[in-house]
Image 1 (tube, rainbow, N blue to C red):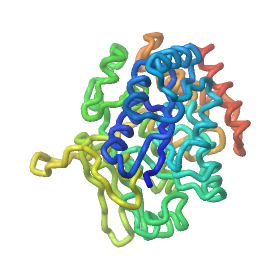
Image 2 (cartoon, rainbow, N blue to C red):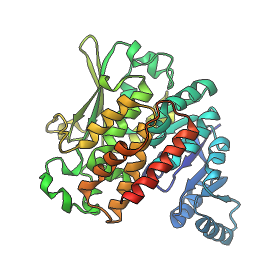
Image 3 (cartoon, one colour):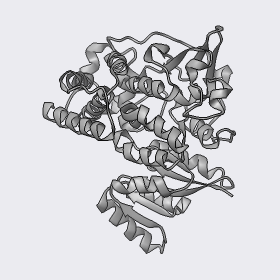
Image 4 (spheres, one colour):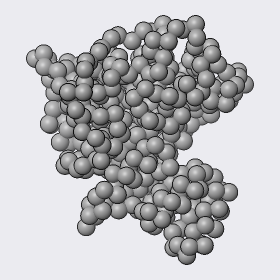
Length: 395
């Protein structure tokens, strides 16, 4: 009997890659439900290809258009609309939920999937950044299995000892109890690793979204260009693997072949290598603890002329400094950083601010928003909204 899979954010890059992997294994998986914000044309195509039972379009007008198009072809697929329906989809749809919604918008549906005790494949790091400890505790309480789809976190997961890897996350024993010395979190450095900083002011959205190694959505591409993405990944790694930020070293690796490494107390360093294709970590998490073909090209080591590594330049990439500060503070500080960054990146993509101001906006918000050490869902949502209001007024 095949496993039913719900894909939240199916029209984004993670969703498209996930559906490609699922379609390669029709004997093992079938699509239970899909969701998107407003991309009607692509959702219609996905409905025709994968025949889900139900679909959520967050935008009501888009949902109406999709219903009309599906009615024209006499499709029985149920179409719902609204943000609140995402959580319903996460609770009801299938044994496995792929969380691919970009940003804080994916928080409530991720929580719903965890509370329902699903196998939850998390690509949207923001929920773990905002409310990570709470989500991991919910996972333990409700028997959910959380597996990371970020290439770096999936790589770390694969490099951990079998006693951790075989139990899934939340693990019965975390990395610090397993002979792990430190985690080496790699990053390419993005498209501006060597660009003179004096030119940052003139960088266009299209330039920032032109990643040298990965094909990603525009928001995460900009985050990669500022290396805010790596800062968010630092916080996510602390949550997933139960370590403090001091146990994580960020390493620039421009080739994006080594996706991350784990160093052990005996001096061994275990790395996970692979092509720069998100179908690799998706296939790994989807089939875990087994292995299936992903459709990605095999890595030809003979084509890898060299592996370069360097320390990140905190002057060039101040987002990494802010992320360390936030990882130390915990509380609602990660929510402030994430919300401010989402507002600033959106403003940059709309050409309302220059590239060099993105992190400035984030730092201003961190300096001006009230700090709370103890947080819950209600306080995190309030902090998120207040930060967005502040940053919008600032801009």
